[in-house]
Length: 101
Image (cartoon, rainbow, N blue to C red; front, side, top):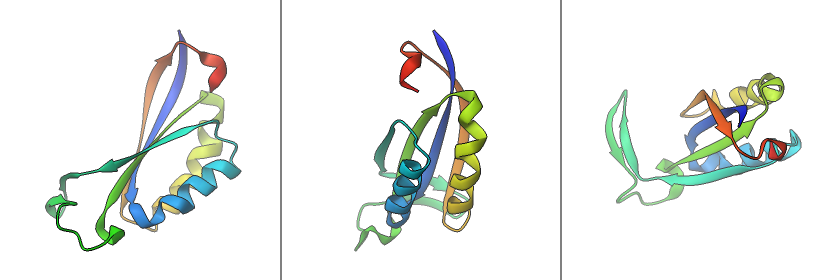
């Protein structure tokens, strides 16, 4: 097992391409983008059901990086996210194939 860091970004869907383009420029070896169907936040419960466009939708982007690469990725990611509705979390994970990250 190999210790890594997982960065999860919950972000407005319209900003997804800017985020994934940034991750590509940062040479992140991979990421996963998932639609978020709803939740609860500071402004109460929300759902993507009935939204007329993607403007109010959210996505979750998960990245796993080596600990020594965390700050190199996290700082520019946070600069992008802080201009939008979104949150960034970091957690410790263990992976089997450490050479992939």
